[in-house]
Length: 103
Image (cartoon, rainbow, N blue to C red; front, side):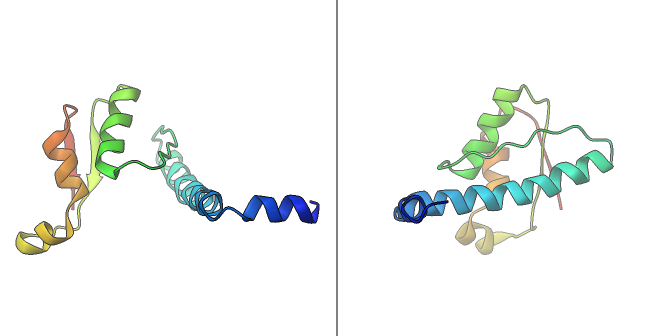
């Protein structure tokens, strides 16, 4: 790759962040897909950028026609959940698709 092309590619910090975030998401999701396949679970890899996680999960489930959303929870209770927020709780509260929370 020519020096100019490398400089232009990384001169925009937002583009650089998005490229690095996409690469990290791909690595993580590739592992999840492989683990699912190893257990006979068919799955799609979806990475939604610039979207609140709970909203993205709900939108993707509706878009894909999912029958169930399965999520893990850290099991935080009381003030910790209120202060830290909970994507699982938000999905559970706002989804029209049934949600299974595993702890």
